[in-house]
Amino acid sequence: MNGQREGVEEQERRILECIRDFIQERGYPPTVRDIARELGISSTSVVDYHLKRLERAKWIERDPRSSRGIRLTAAGARGLGLGEIISVPLLGDIAAGEPIPVPSSDFSLLGVEETIELTRSIVGDPRDLYALRVRGNSMIDAMIHDGDIVIMRPTPSVENGEMAAVWLEDREETTLKRVYWEGGRVRLQPANPTMAPIYVDDPRQVKIQGKVVMVIRQVR
Amino acid sequence: MNGQREGVEEQERRILECIRDFIQERGYPPTVRDIARELGISSTSVVDYHLKRLERAKWIERDPRSSRGIRLTAAGARGLGLGEIISVPLLGDIAAGEPIPVPSSDFSLLGVEETIELTRSIVGDPRDLYALRVRGNSMIDAMIHDGDIVIMRPTPSVENGEMAAVWLEDREETTLKRVYWEGGRVRLQPANPTMAPIYVDDPRQVKIQGKVVMVIRQVR
DNA sequence: ATTATAAACGAACATCCGTTCGGTGTCAAA
DNA sequence: TTTGACACCGAACGGATGTTCGTTTATAAT
Image (spheres, each protein chain N blue to C red):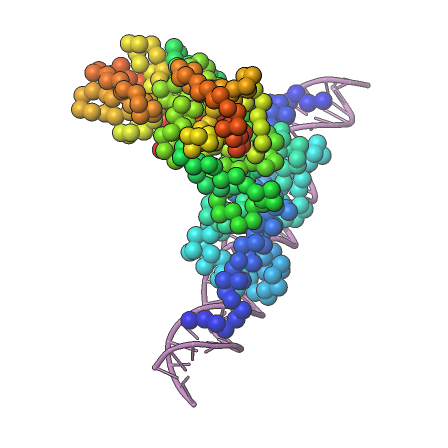
């Protein structure tokens, strides 16, 4: 039974957060003395006591007699909101007057010079993703700016309402629009609700080149 | 001039890989002695010599007199294909008719229910970031869609041309625009190059609430 | 052959650091 | 009131660790 001190769980949560923050700032875990300093604990054996409890509760693992030998377990990392990185290859540019580069079926990360690093929590299913950088102002109707990065997934076709990179044969133009198959014709709906859609009477003119999964704008 | 030993660059590449592998396996960097053991180098001063060279070449940083005080630089991490996750708290919504939630000065991740996980390589300096979700179509002139996520950094003021969340006192409105201080007046420039700017004659009407660092759109 | 430079090396030192130990204070239960 | 458990504490110890120093080896340039 304890009630002597401020909540022990509170203290131990602070220790976990201290470990996380220290790792984020310094790139390596704290020592027992680092933790004591950060949390205003005057004795290293108090920190050791709590670290032992955190280890028993499986929030951390410790490597004995090893400096900075503290490691967050998978549960500990999740509890602190830490996650998984997905590297998405940046294959090139997307511009109005050209079909986009589409990865070949045996595509892999080998030889890719640049990648965009996202996390699984914002990107979801990581399979087959690739990135294109927008070149020019031609995607404004999709509310996509010159320099934005578009994350794509290859697909031969999209369902009604999904946003795709579309190559229009007759216009020789790539556009990013929500695609609606309406009877025999195709409606290409801009993301900007104040703009009018494009209607294509011959669906064969419409080539779906990939589905848009995400847009990223690094603001300078 | 050297050619005495096996390629020094080869040795230093192995040291970098040793550091990466050690971190992936143990969750913390190796000591000088750990590296020596892994690579069959008999003297800690040889490792120290090479670590100094890697530091000068800016592949790593070292914290002096600190155990395991080795950190891969951004270049070093990229060179090894590693990334670092930054958790950005999602504090709430941004809409035209309200000032945005701004984190208090003693803000921390405590009590934050939702975070957006980004990587350092796309977000840069991770300090003090927070995220807001756009509600409504009022940010279209910034080419920002309902549902987009805006990554912000608190700042009392921005330099010419930087994009900020601006609260306009007289209009009682939040807007995202590039801010230009022109003599006694302020020009608020939309991101959409086809749209006209707003001019505010009284700079006191303009409250900078944060700088826009990034925009993320998860396309449904 | 000599010299200069770079890389490697062993040993030693001082500091860092994990861990232990004996102790204190607090509080609930007996 | 006494006891036991828990949390905190200071001090100390021994091992871990970074760093320095003087030396050796290898090789290219002269």
